[in-house]
Amino acid sequence: MSSSDALLQALLTLNRVQAQELLAAARAEHSALEVIELLIRPALEQLGQLWEGGDCALSQIYMSGRICEELLEELFGEISETDPSESEAAEPRLAIAVLEDYHLLGKQIVRTVLRAAGYRVRDYGRQDVETLVELVRSDGIEVLLVSTLMLPAALRVRALVERLRAVAPDVRIVVGGAPYRFDDQLWREVGADAVGLSAGEILAILERLEVKP
Amino acid sequence: MTHQSPTSLPMDPPVAPMTSMERVLTALGQREPDRVPLFLFPVMQGARELGLSIEEYFARPEHVAEGQWRLRAKFGHDCLYNFHYAAIEIEAWGGTTLFRADGPPNAGAPIVRDPEDIQRLSVPRIEDSPSLQRVLEATRLMAGQARGEAPIVAVVMSPFSLPVMQLGFERYLILMHERRDLFEHLMQLNERFCVDWANAQVEAGAHAICYFDPVSSATITSRELFLATGREVARRTIAQFKAPAAMHFASGRILPRVADLFDTGTAVIGVSSHEDLGELKRAAQGRLSLLGNLNGIAMRHWTPEQADVAVRTAIRKAGRGGGFILADNHGEIPWQVPDTVLMAIAQAVARWGRYPLADDQDD
Ligand code: B12
Image (tube, each protein chain N blue to C red):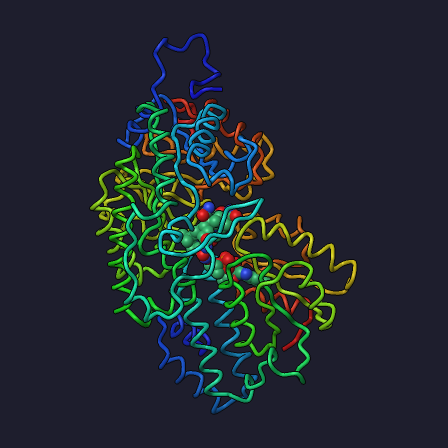
């Protein structure tokens, strides 16, 4: 079993101690970024795939994401110590928001995956179209991730895309959340550039968009 | 159209069609009625029917009863549904609801911010909640209209799923994993509330309780966690209902744990478009009936032909032998679904749902 498989097993069973041992052992041989690349990232991507196929549960995704974030903090404080949402100096090109929806869990999980994979992401919380467009423009965001749970909110992404295309045509918009998982045409219909069917998919999407940690 | 099939052919034997109630009871008895029963759940569409906003519509029981009655006259489905919106239970617990013009209301800010506050929560009395009283009144009005001809389906949130709105999802997931003591206490409170609420609706004339429990689905909780929590909660709670229950997973997956549901006391399970109806039917072994599984979200842009194919496929996979009620997979048709699609679904059921099923030989 590769060590990323071992990490996956530890995460699925929410075995924090084992996950910690695996990461510590890997850290003894590799740089922090290599540990992320070799262990954490594949494990998170696989968790997403398992969930999409109905082979693991959101409770496991959420709790294991928390474990990863905590362990990263403990083991390699150097990476996550600058929280971009607080640090003025950081220049994140990546932002995430919930659009006109009161459900924040999807966004939290995606943010956790991104952080655990070494990305810095600006968290805008819950926003309406106008404020979000303004934030994206003034912060010079290059890729905007949008999470929605309710169908009317998912449909509002169309208005967001139209406004953004007008004022910041280069911004790429990645959407996700339950409505997109039930209607595979919806992301195109609202004009998004990509869709993630699980939180883990965001890593491959960013790679495709050539956004590096 | 009415619930009678408009496509009767001249050579059909001259038997009176069943009432919706007979049709549904026969299907739930794992036998074939005259045709596959259809449960359409156009929860908000009554507002459109009456020319009201969604908020205005839910503000008065007369609206809801009238709206549901008119929709049934229009589409000819086999039940009346008293569901308003999930957050109405949260209103009874002291929380708020946020309305929007083009979709279902949502719960406002969680009522429990600090998990320790769970110790200080008390169970709301049904009599004290004007919101729940409205639902009861709507139920009584529906019962008066239907007079036993069609079943009245009532709704409760399961004690295990309600906390997502009481605490917020993240806090609840953490509570479940890290504070079993407080979790168990919350379940005691919620179970008492749920049983009271279910039985008050039965008293008001409901014939069945739809127990919404998506947190028990394989989408949300691992099997290990479910067996230790949601299943026990369901077993204890459903046993105290004074009417049959349907466990609904709101389009969450359930296939890997169908057998785990046999002894929960549920008679029916609401199933997702993400899973194969044929496999679900086999897993249910005639011990549970299936309710589902048309994709309500995709339905928004179905053509009449697509609706026809979806209905036909579902009936072909799960209709044989009864034990199947055709419905959407969530228990609520989105506001954006056009009436023409709902009409096409109803017509397709009349066309393909008649027993004995025409496709019986070929699958
Ligand atoms: C559990 C559940 C419930 C529970 C808890 C809901 C809650 N969160 O508050 C209860 C029973 C309370 C409930 C109630 C309702 N529900 Co509900 N519920 C569900 C269910 C089964 C899971 C929802 C959930 O929270 N999942 C967890 C989140 C995190 O999952 P997710 O959004 O899919 O996110 C994952 C991925 O999509 C991805 N992702 C998310 N965002 C992003 C962003 C990016 C950029 C990327 C890359 C990836 C990504 O990562 C996440 C993890 O992998 C879904 C159906 C389903 N099968 O998913 C319906 C569903 C969300 N419910 C729905 C509805 C309508 C409701 C109600 C409004 C019904 C009503 N009329 O009252 C209420 C609202 C409750 C409220 N809060 O006020 C609809 C919403 C769509 C619609 N029709 O508008 C759904 C989709 C069902 C359906 N098929 O139609 N529900």
